[in-house]
Image 1 (tube, one colour):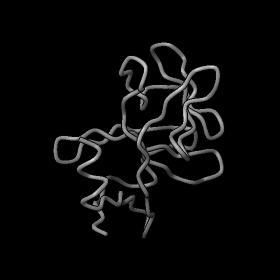
Image 2 (image 1 turned 90 degrees about the vertical axis):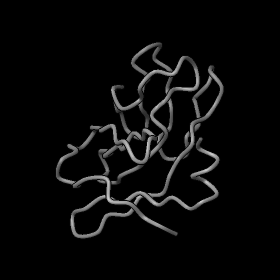
Image 3 (image 1 turned 30 degrees about the horizontal axis):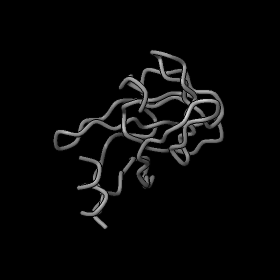
Length: 110
């Protein structure tokens, strides 16, 4: 599966996020308090809010527009709201962050 360099791990503080553009698509990359990194589409399913600008708490991000709570590890919106966002696999190697995009999930993300 092709992987794409999207930044350096040291540039995203714990409990922080960054917006990343790659080939015309926008992703939100999160560095959680446990040290793990996760990538999701940077668009809330409710009203399209930029999730990379939300507050990160534990494994959740809160949409900056209407406070929807989304699990960044699996993309699921938390009750009482419903929905999901697409998630993408991430690898860290030598302090660099890579997002893995195969042709199937790249097409579906469109």
